[in-house]
Image (cartoon, rainbow, N blue to C red):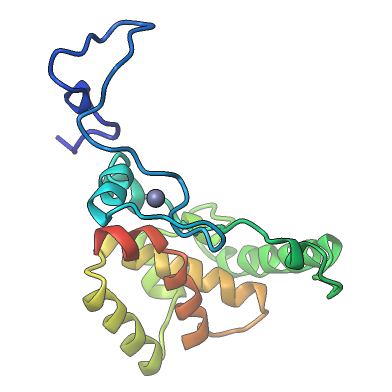
Length: 190
Ligand SMILES: [Zn+2]
């Protein structure tokens, strides 16, 4: 049986009553909520953070394509005058990437329409890697003790990053970006 996805009543201190409205005292200190916040101090120990994150089980995290930290935007960034890429132009890139994927899968018996649907056998066919890419991925897998399932997710996401750039082949920078999207494996599960 896979480990539980959420914490159990074992988290509660002995003698605390598990009924609605009861004030429950916890055995373990709770995180302050400012971990990784650039503007606030967090003095939580890593076991506290790890305990909190481990409420989501590793097998569940593996099934999520992208996890990423989104730090709070500070005032200067909010007032920045640099013009970000517009939603309209991002939309165009996404439409083009989706078209690329439809064309890529048009010869298959299965009706696939996006990279996220690729099964392991498809990944071998459609996510071909150069020696440089192989080396980069191999190193990340070893350093971060990533699983086979995570390996496949990285390849699918890398293929999509390349498609969004209209790049025909997956390049090391696409692999590197896809590895970046495994924040939670890297920080807490490796
Ligand atoms: Zn903290």
